[in-house]
Length: 311
Image (cartoon, rainbow, N blue to C red; front, side, top):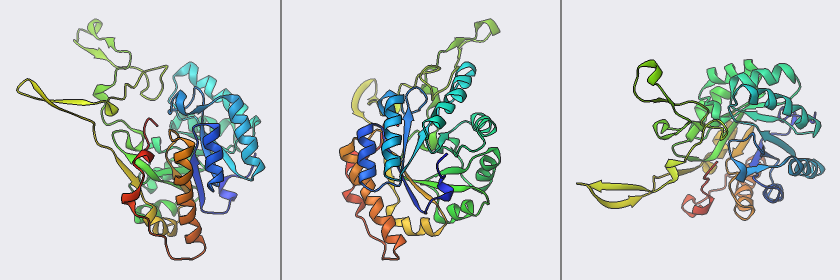
């Protein structure tokens, strides 16, 4: 295996890439490492995943520039899928990927037992929020734990003081109904309902995983227009709000707290939009590292099209 983040020069800027072209854009903009999805095993869906051939090409190109590639295999698989997923990681190791990102505790523990030298990150989908959560995933075998950009520098500092584990902070993300990787609207998911009539109960039982198209489908109702009715008459149509979080102006405090990896969300972004976003954080990290005054960014100027959707 190539050196893990723990052996890297910190802080590491970890950027998303939903395509080979996006990977090139992220690296050219100054990312120290990128994370990608592998087709069939990523929550991002087919739009933000790489084929096996694309992944091998991206890994080779990144390593040629001394950069790293991590693969998000962050679904929650069922039994037969679990065995296939665990076996597929052997291929990833053979392709020299620099680690994987998972969001299922059982998968994490199994991968650690089977591949003891593989760098494994506990995804933001694991919903770690404090130092006790961080210690829990460390003990399961995580090398690093991703925390959300909603935590304060003080909370991040407490987590970073947990021995034997690296803290990653997702400081550019969208706070919406799937913040922390958990849907806030489960009643609107239709996941292969099974009638409960045989139990003498009316209604259906939902089965499957919200995070795996093969086991259950998310219809993304949070991204669809909603109609507001008054006295039976439709008066307006609205989209549910989402708020883009960009903690770049607090970056110095976050890095001073001991965060080792600055992670950006956005595998859905095009190369044209991803490059400027990564460059923005590269400039801020370099200013902090050089001891220069923290750069101030006008958040009002943040391009609305940078908003991350369909992660």
